[in-house]
Image (cartoon, rainbow, N blue to C red; front, top):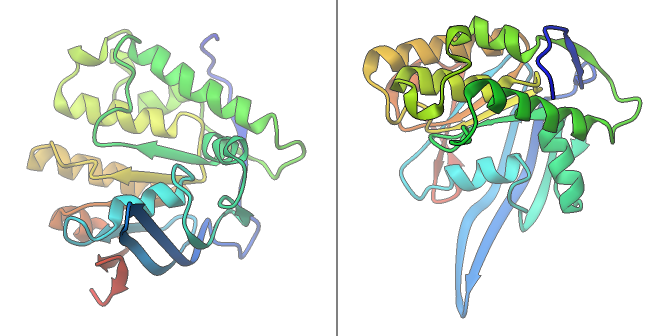
Length: 246
């Protein structure tokens, strides 16, 4: 894999199609005779260019919902579509392909491979997305910035040769976001992305997430932070696996 400053092509939603459409999603977990209802009929529509926060107490189902939306977990019932394409009740290979080509995932930790420099982390993410897109044939496309342009935009262009352990907390957060955006996804999903950041760095990351949404990406963030919720276009509150009034 070699660095490139050329723009890449990525799928887009058809006019009027939500970037994310979850309908009546259930998730059950069983352990012996015990059954846990993690999600109980959750429905959610998120448009391209919308910044939505999923809020709620610990154990309310936020992380489970994100896992189902990205295809990392299979819901027990209901449907989830990304840009009109169903991601659940598909083979693992198909779910992986959709996630690689259309969904950027920013975890609180774990976005960066520790034995790769930041440059190679970004190259890897872009390569995986291109591999996923190779299965889509004549898919709808749009122009997305290269990973090098994304790194520069997020202010880590001078740190591409650094190892993850050499980054500050703010730099790590920006690098993790750059990895999630490396291939120009339709949807950005983040689970507690500011949980380990100070207030100043958190505010900066919120502004960057708002800028991502303004470029036409559906941004979905699970967070306990009041600051993150205040920066969003909309807050969806979960409690005991159900959507409740905020």
